Amino acid sequence: MVRFMASKVRLYVDHPLGEGQSVPLSREQAHYLFGVMRLGEGTVVSLINGADGEWDAEVVKASKKGGVLTCSEQTAALQMPPDLWLLFAPIRKERTAFIVEKAVEMGVRRVMPVQTDFTQSANRIRQDKLQAHAVEAAEQCGGTFVPPVNDLARLDRVLADWPDDRQLMFCDEVLIGDPVGLPDIAGPWAILVGPEGGFSPAERDRLRGLPYAHPVSLGPRILRADTAAVAALTVWQQALGDWG
Amino acid sequence: MVRFMASKVRLYVDHPLGEGQSVPLSREQAHYLFGVMRLGEGTVVSLINGADGEWDAEVVKASKKGGVLTCSEQTAALQMPPDLWLLFAPIRKERTAFIVEKAVEMGVRRVMPVQTDFTQSANRIRQDKLQAHAVEAAEQCGGTFVPPVNDLARLDRVLADWPDDRQLMFCDEVLIGDPVGLPDIAGPWAILVGPEGGFSPAERDRLRGLPYAHPVSLGPRILRADTAAVAALTVWQQALGDWG
Image (spheres, one colour):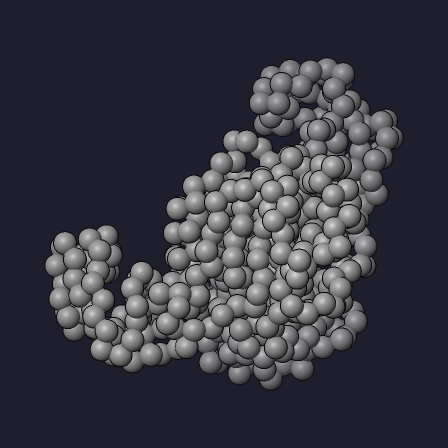
């Protein structure tokens, strides 16, 4: 943990990676590598694309408008997180970005912002910005997989399309102080963290009536949504995920 | 969780609370209650002082320069968190504030910023600001206890004065991917989260030689320090703390 200040620059590219593969850079990437980071031709950087693991790549052409890298060798294989989705109700902008970052660090397959009855309408999201946060978190924290971030969708519609075989752990503030209560069921899962103000009575009734939904408690204290997200991911990863 | 938008204003005061107790307000508190929140005489607010639980108190005098509240009834007893300290190496300002906030939400008795070999000297802390963050977190998240935030101290000095009976869980990035490995020992504990860049070899050797220090793993992925703090607190609270 916390050794994300790698000596080698890590960059996400939307391009296949493989031995001898040439990777063109966008103007923005070239600005970052050659302008901000002041790298020159011959420098080796780390590339990820979310699918092919991590590769060393050498700068073979550097210009203000772009550049080209050539992959030399794979330095890490793709590490897929467990089949876990994180559903959360958007909160204030900065904290929403934190939740996405934390989801990437803690390891999820998909990030799904959901609008609940008590989600403040002011808490709009920019899907493209949140996806960029996910990329940045993977770059900085050594990840090789970048979870897709969905557009905001209404919780009731998400539940209407729910896959039969996926369990849902929902963090229910009504249970404050109860034992955690996560059932030991293998297979695909999702975690749902509610908004400020919790779930509405109608949502709670609906969730409690779903055979795949399991209410859990996160201790005796009230947690903010971003804290609850990390705590819930920890509980799940430790009990059912890939924490050894 | 996440129902921190209480309808009643919650305020921390540095004053005893009890039935019929008068509580004078500072100019700053009066500005907040009467200027920002626009409360008037007769309004009931919630008071905490970190020691006497939570009390309803009525505004009996409101002015720009101050004011007076009178406590009516106790609405919650003092809820002490388990005897757990959180030691962490300061990181960037905003994230350091987050760690303090998370420590209060997750429940600790004391917050101790420590300077490790790899702590960047730019990461100075303002103890008074961090203490104010702890107060704010307790106000917003329904807490009745506010952990003291220590001044920054060197890790080696903190360890030199360490109490014999307190276990120390240290989050060691060298163990990435191992099982968590928290031993089941009752009594006082502390959690130590390292800085960006991890512990120095000398620190790790020293920590591993201490009979009360227990290295733990927080999964197979690299976590930022603020994420690691919440994850470590979750692991500890669930196994040895007060999570039901």
